[in-house]
Length: 132
Image 1 (cartoon, helix red, strand yellow):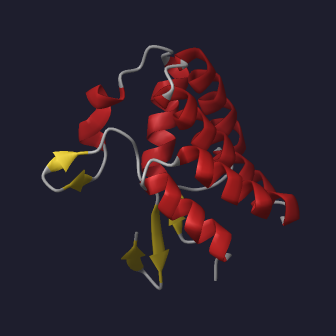
Image 2: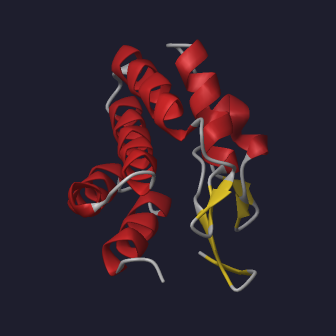
């Protein structure tokens, strides 16, 4: 079972509250041991990349996306029940292009209320069932 702070971080992330997600995951990261420590570090860096992107800092977002990928590269798309495949795809694009327009990649991500989300969501699977 995932720590409640991880679950709260997933919820915050999926609601676009990237700084809050970062804060929640950072408290877990401080207590974690490898390999989970690196995984949480990657999620933290990813959240901050999206936070910077939202604030118009494309260069900082691109740098943080690259760092997040460095931490997450050793992990499969699904680890600890969390599907990060959309996130990794988005981070790869962001790391390559400082001027990325997230809306241009919207079709790659989940659809909500007949509109595509511009940013990726994290999908948590519990016993093989999606729990967002």
